[in-house]
Length: 225
Image (cartoon, rainbow, N blue to C red; front, side):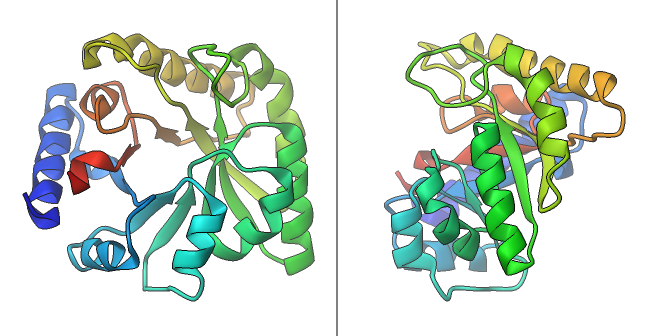
């Protein structure tokens, strides 16, 4: 299928999943994961109405997207971000979904202070507890959130996770549900901190994520294969 055909299929699957959950599909943003894809593919998706694009590596994003700008387009950093790449990231991306430590948040805050900007961020949470994954451990977030809230140049907007690789998409449901429940508990404990965004679900499991409340799904392979 073409990119246009793949995109239509993904959008229809998001709509159907939202309907099953009794929620409007307008609450779900599709973040097109464009790692390893040329700028021409991003341009095509933009012309088809996609406005959110996810990149995993700052070096690739820099080579591909420096100077690229279209009205309404948002570039999301969704891969692990090293502190020594923060300056480059702040120059290129519009949102960092992979905030995985207070030290990284402080580095982003410091760089944004220098450039007189602010950066929307999501806390990446290692909800599955896998050693190979980055992110805050669930038990850490209640101590970390006040530390993040005191930083003036980042805007904490929600949480993000990756479910483990499972044989069937349905097996990812408990992880997505756990992230939503953890977000809800954070908002209860810290009523001044709103965390509206739930970024969860990728090509193999995004429909389950939508059913469990995702506001952003990060889909790459389904758009390009």
